[in-house]
Every structure is written in C-alpha cells, then in structure tokens.
Image (tube, rainbow, N blue to C red):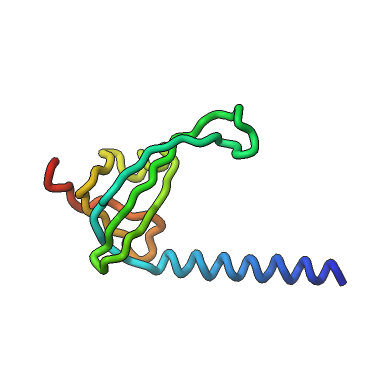
Length: 109
C-alpha cells in the first residue's frame, strides 16, 4: 500500500512539473531591465567551505507593467547575454523559448 502511495506521489509531481514547465515555455513578454544584482553563494548550500558561485538577479518591468525577477548563474548569464545587460536594455521572451534575449540597448549605451 505504501508503495502505491509513493508511486502515485511521484506521478503527480511529474505531471505538475510538466504542466508548470509547459506554461512557462508558452509565455511571451517583453520589457526593460530595471535592476541588476550580483551576489555569491556556496555551490553546496549545506557546506560553507564549498566553492562560491556568482549569480545575477535581473529585475525586468514588462510592457504589461508586471515586475519579473529572473536569476542565472554567471556562466549561464554570459552565454545568454555575451555583451552583458545594463539597466534600460530591452529584453524579450518569445513563446516556446526557455530564456529571454536582448532586443535593444538602453538609451545610455
């Protein structure tokens, strides 16, 4: 009986994660970068002596007026935005894309 409960729980989790992922992939939006934050945290949260990983948190104000806060490890950020991002840059996430891309430079560049 416990085995069936565990199997059912795993199936429900997979279905929910799949649904959430599909919903995120289907979204499309565009907006302007309003804030960039860099911070570091241990690669292994349970071990304070582990290697530190640099993260970037980017706040984006969408055209619809909603504020999104996205986070990437520095290595992933550098692959997505090789020229970097600054406040004022315009970004867009197309439906079906996992991550947004830069479409225009900010006014101060």
